[in-house]
Amino acid sequence: MAGQDPALSTSHPFYDVARHGILQVAGDDRCGRLIVTFSCCRMPPSHELDHQRLLEYLKFTLDQYVENDYSLVYFHHGLHGGNKPSLGWLQSAYKEFDRKYKKNLKALYVVHPTSFIKVLWKLFKPLISHKFGKKVTYCSSLRELREHLQCDQLPIPQEVLRYDEKLRDLHRGLPPPDTKKPPPRPPLPTQQFGVSLQYLRDKNQGALIPPVLRLTVTYLREKGKPVNFDDYGDIHVPAVVLKTFLRELPQPLLTFAAYEQILGITSVESSLRVTRCRQILQSLPEHNHAVLHYLMGFLHEVSRESLYNKMNSSNLACVFGLNLIWPSQGLSSLSALVPLNLFTELLIEYHEKVFNPPEAPGERAPGPTEASGQGSPLSRQCARAGAPQASPCLSRLRVP
Image (tube, rainbow, N blue to C red; front, top):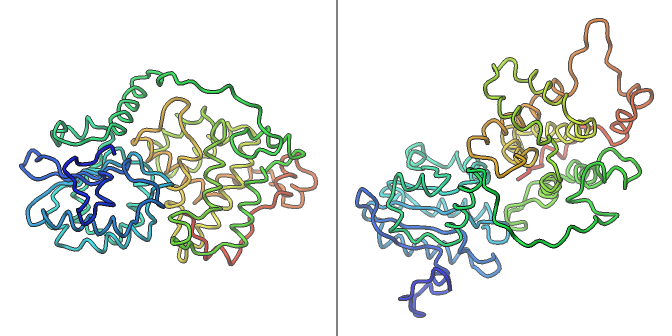
């Protein structure tokens, strides 16, 4: 098995976990401190790994070293829905690692972090001390990690090395390696994922809001309830349907063309950002604008119940931001996360001002009945699709 210590004996008390090579003790850092590595890519599917045993193995291993200073390197690449522990498990794990483990941990390096890590940090922030938070260093590449550690001593998994090389190629503008792909097949008549908004409209009798989006939002609005992490791991199924639908659109809902404009939102004066958001949205295709309006209206509802569901506009932006917009080539860089999430937060927080601008002097915006009766076909379909209505269930809804 890749990553397994050849000296590992089957009599090891945690052989069932240790054989995967998830946790390894490496050389010393530049301050002479022992280095412990944790590699997510070596975690097997959740049904093949007892996460409680993994926690016990972590403590068993660290108990041998925590009396002295040590550093921890966490390779995040390779963590996915199939092997990811539940948030409930992560919370209990953090509580299990008491001061004995945290006191002599001098540095925690998070390599190749994703938006999931950012969301996780927000969720656990109330539990994490300021002193411990200062020990965390994010490294978006192995090159950045080498600025702190001598990586030639680290047992870096091949999967991580290949991923890092792929990221370097993308940043240099090089095309990804050629891979043989089967020729694209025409979408199925009832297909909802991986097809364009126009295709969905044509196949659903001109319905403006895609059925999967409308039905999922309706379900979440009417059946919203707290997430049981034991049932779903760390995901509420209807909410992840929303994110998957958005992410699998051939072009992001906010369009490739708007990407650079959105990145510039942080350079706009705070008092003018809502206006700038409105200007950017004016360049969207009419259909994209209507679908975005519908979705942001729903997320605005959820955010208004943040006192109960803990999902304010900022948290929702972290969850949905990268599913609304991404570059036409490569991946969004870490530096892009701030403006992309800020833009999404503004759309949610100031939904009415962004999508329903103030009336111009001498003009009157059409009311709901006018919009559904005499407005444009697009306006009438928006009304028929159902403008988001407040619901007491939303006070219980928590979107992951």
